[in-house]
Length: 255
Ligand SMILES: [Zn+2]
Image 1 (tube, protein in one colour):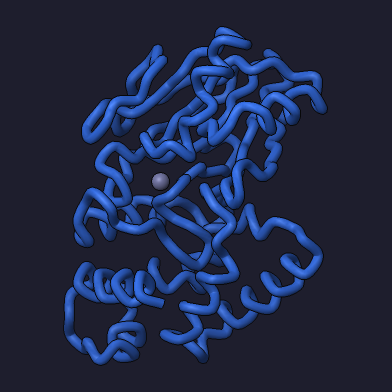
Image 2 (image 1 turned 45 degrees about the horizontal axis):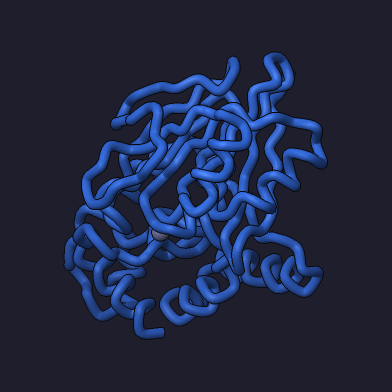
């Protein structure tokens, strides 16, 4: 039986995610921005929380952990502490670790840059990657704790995943990301198609997530910092990809 994934809104613009294994009834929450919407989503499905997979230490990703752990006595999986303490953790994971949610397997990718502890969870069997605040649709996370080369390297790890994998990210930021990306690549056909799709989805108050990695590779300017056309658009012909990425990130910060 295939895994079931549910997506819902938490806080103002965070996504909550549940991934459920029908065979074992195990259910994981990817991050826990706040407890109430996660408890409601579990209740709608009749599922019980067995695991929380934390991507990084920011409050809008761990705020609900203590309450959920107390209510469900679930296992809390989190990256090793590098920058700050995440509480209530049962299992610390590093790059390459594989964890089980029932019979589902999640592979840990260390994707630092936004924070030093940031990890992404790849469910190869489900063709799904939960990249939180590293990779957004048509955008990427702000580089708070790491460096631009570090973040670019993390994006390359995600870009290396197959085109038919679905990206589940931490926030609904796609519309603003599209507006910025069009300033750099106004003639990118894949980006223009995504822009139209995002306008349609948001007008219907629907999420823009998940999205296919193959589409992101074509349309997300932050995954395209090594494209000569992107460097040329920034008047950075011949510059290294990490440097071009850094310029993109700086411009987005100011946009
Ligand atoms: Zn964050």
